[in-house]
Length: 155
Image (tube, rainbow, N blue to C red):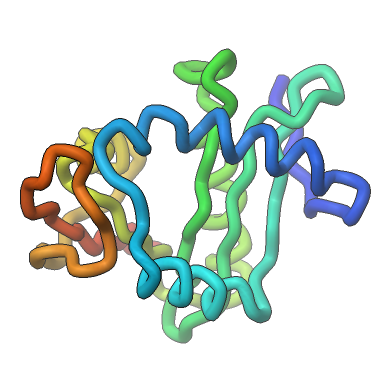
């Protein structure tokens, strides 16, 4: 069973471990540039961090913040050893529940098309709203990357 709870200060090392594991495969495709790191830092202000646990072990992490009329998701990561076990789904469902309780209209996120994550988020109820060339990431292959903005309607 997957449990979700707000992160605590005692979770910092485990969150770093899970984030590093979860981002490892993405870093084969791209890495953020300076502008992306600045944007991530700004997003982190007033953000809520949730962790997913299996048998009291942190196996997933996600952050979100209010951007009325939506809750915006970022920093979703699942430990490589626990992928394909619904960890991301459970974390996103928790955020969707919080969005409904707060009368938000949708949950939103950005992803990079070349990672293959668009289809995963579509299976989790998200729809592509817009796409554009990404100017905040550096492709490991030198190719132009595509940033995809997605939303999951709730109301």
